[in-house]
Image (cartoon, helix red, strand yellow):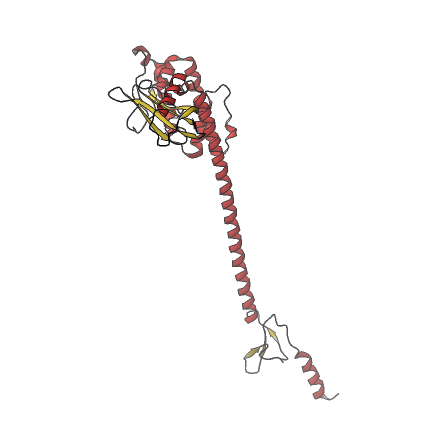
Length: 315
């Protein structure tokens, strides 16, 4: 075979087009080069790892990584939002359960004077004697709970008024006596909530309800003789009550609801357990149960201690 013919066949074998998904360059005798497909025939194709195709692929891969990261973050945010929503539903359900249980406990409490027939009858009469624009008239009151009472000239009762026209109106009716000795009644339509600054939901019986809001619990002399008020048991009861109120007033949120729940449940014949609350509510309930167990035992067996405990008013 002629030499020129052999060289021509050899060159024809290496001038086939290289793959288009990579950067191939063809150097020339001057030290420069051209990329395919600017040139389509070359006897010395060289792959360039930093060529245009590789840079474009790297940029596309980077864009894909960024997009994937954004999608993952969006999914994570949606998951977090769903989890927060679920926890909020659980928290609200636990709080509703705690309030309902506390309300039942307040209803059956021996301190709930609003359920006494005489007081309940007066509450019903005072409600019906008001000048209602819609002419409402109640025939019964359900779930009567004592909100405040000083044993003399002030009592506040919350309940659900069954109106003659079929409506059920929830609210609080407060009865008090003015300076002239005349009775005054005030109505406020509202839902029932645990008394926010008194852990049992019922105020003790001071001589007068405080008009202001002192910073902390205050000691009011109990109706006992001097020997009792100065006894060691009396002082222990007052100190323990002050410690309890100080701790309780420092709580908030679900933990406070849980502590309130136990403070109301403990007086029931069969109190509910803390495990029905869950979360921070269960923690607050368990802590309250631990803190109140010893003082409750002493209150039941030591009159002086009980008098000291009751001498502290949470305002």
